[in-house]
Image (cartoon, rainbow, N blue to C red; front, side):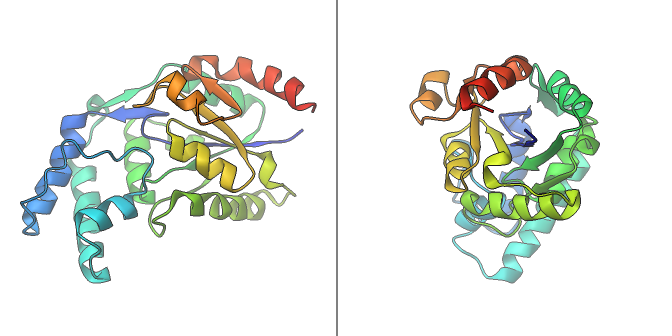
Length: 226
């Protein structure tokens, strides 16, 4: 049975050093005269970038939002380097496995599309993904799977069903968004949520890390009866 695999980025594929990303966002807010908010302890896990910045800016007008967005992307491109990024164990092997299977591999992430590219380019992974959905236009992560599905069908020229999409992420929001579209929900405990916390959200599979990635596919396929 053919499947398409969509990966979250932060907490699933990689981790950007806390001091780099948070300080960068803090500087941008202060540049726009917002000094009363400290982003150090705000939970961003599973949120889209549009939702994060809209909340930080208190639901701004479109012009201000886009100004801040552009400054953020420019600063991220200017300051982020490979040394600031930790790639989780199993990521390269998982992507190599999917490439050998010629599986459609994409991204389903709350990152702005350009932010996703900047992060993945820094570690040489951006070209491994052929399609995706991003946080530029969506506040709600649950709006991302339909966008990814539409692009998958358009680019592949093949017929897919929502249940053919496997969405892999590290937060309860990733599980919820997969469930909202009838897709397979795979949780990986490399982010801020533990294995038990993710299991309590009833994903189809919970992984400790992506080092377990190739092995779970055969077991899951047998369990699903495919």
